[in-house]
Length: 197
Picture 1 (cartoon, rainbow, N blue to C red):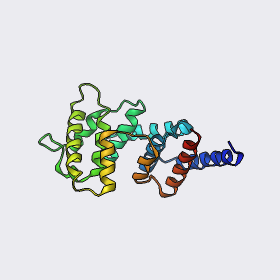
Picture 2: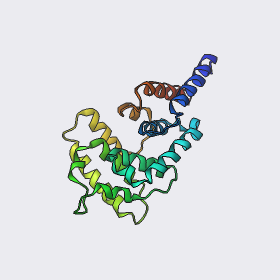
Picture 3: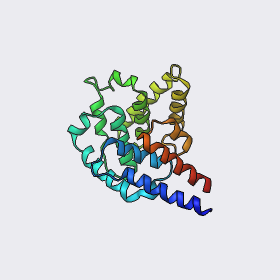
Picture 4: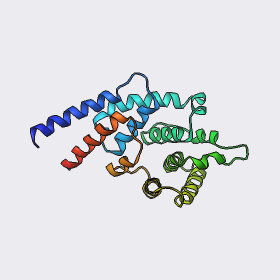
């Protein structure tokens, strides 16, 4: 490997480390953890990611915190925490249901949230009926939405339905970046590493 490439790689790793090292964890930090995992870069930052997730877990177990989050935020937080081995209850999704016991109608307009709900539902443990219902609800609406979405959104929906939690650079480019200044660095580091494989 050329020395300048090795130096560039090391610098990019440190730039990303500075982006994700933060005392006050926000939702943007969780988005960056998701981006790092999707790009296969998370192994560089295990300690930093664990600190972020531990703080998110403490917030996530607070019912008041969850009540003020939208479908996308609740689903993403649930999925990432469960993927990383945190014991989070699927009961958080009960807050997304109406008095009739069904998921509320307004969720049908949140395509990004439904995609994340579908991905979260794939982490269902036997007996978690609410996640089975979430999978059915989200996949049905996402399938119906394919006819009305633009090409970019439709590709994202198809990709989510066919390959939940896909790890690759192409998928990341379709997503909204976690932080504008971080997205370029994340992609640059991922491209550099993919060139080595």
